[in-house]
Image: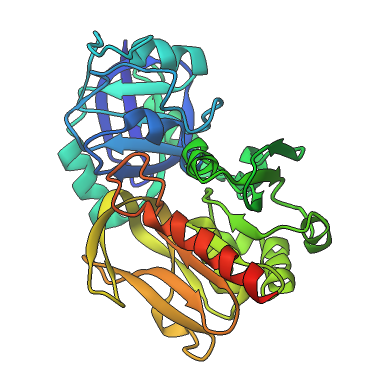
Length: 358
């Protein structure tokens, strides 16, 4: 079935449809990751996005039970150069096509993803749609131009009710802004007792649980659309150790007087970051379209701990007074290298020190 990928600037690409058959509108982005398409598609950080994979062949390992980041993915669609109709991997339980059909996520293949990526790099992320090629083009384009993308993405993906994940170690409260399963798994490996709360949990509700630490997770969208979460962080920091990842990092920055901005095309895939204290460089998993503005960081409040190698954007912050730090990258390494898993150990060490001193 022929389908069109239409961009907000009027550019369109024709390709073969696979997966779900619905017409969709979302924000077009590209990811440079060479592995981990299942994790990327099921991460709630891709909520509302049409994800372009720059790696030329996607789907050759199929879909398995272990690599889900969420059970109900909310990305709008995927764009690939070529999708594998047959899966060849001992863990595979279904093909990518079968999975996308089940989840109602449309895909389009046969696209010149290199040309598309260059377009996004030059023009920035923009609205896009995947529609049937038989539709009237001008009508589909008018619908795309008139569409308003939602701003309540975190509300769409966060848990509605609190739930536990019992353990025998540190009592950690997770504020679910778009929680990845792999983040929970890393804390479970460290025997943490987890309580997952909705994004709109109050400071009082969090502190009532007597946590040893609080984790602000990754998630989709603009951190400035979450003013109540920013205020909550202001109330709890200094009273309990705090760790922010990705969107949680941006909210931590806003709570301490820094500003954030929308990036031209964001960071999606694996990116090198430098730890400023040691000079060590490692590759990290990333998936964000917003970043912390460098010039807005108050050095009396926050210390910059990591920078991205290519564009020198901020990748980590540490509070100068309180037990609190954050990273823009996703240390759970899913998908990606395991270079940054030690960040979870730093969170554990921070909680240990806090308990000794209080």
